[in-house]
Image 1 (cartoon, rainbow, N blue to C red):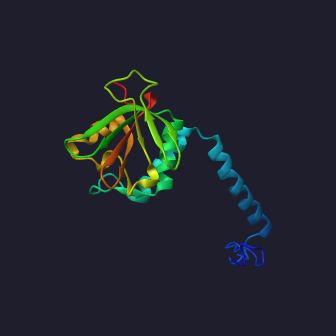
Image 2: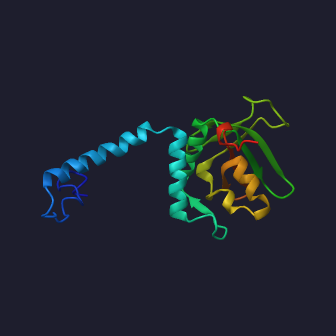
Image 3: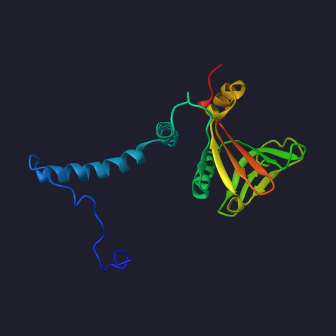
Length: 193
């Protein structure tokens, strides 16, 4: 509390580190300054696709390789919205299904046209319409759980098809139904035939 009101100095872990007497403190400070600037400059210079690849590699390193048993990653509402915003910015085609029961479901293929903390709209009207549904709307803040998956989480008979066609997929669980959102790969990510 005192730190946030300015009555106490902010915690700085660097200040409490012991100084290595064999190193020139000026060179250390310059190196740190360059490192702080370099990371931001590198991130700005990377294309969105390359940033996505780096993020995917980091996630694989954090959550393990593809040869482990099936797993799913629970993500927060904020992370789910960030991922959906990323897919919207990339103008990814989204296959979205609302499943109420094995007998009752609906599906649309479109793009994410609107996203806030209280509404996600996946709309097919910008594409050639197939079927009787134009869009899927749901309120992400009323979801119980968000699960992120990729091809490694699929049963073996589907994993190759998912790896070739989709970047990833998210399951959004509600009290009485769930929403399946599949982000299709862009043209340059698809394998050549």
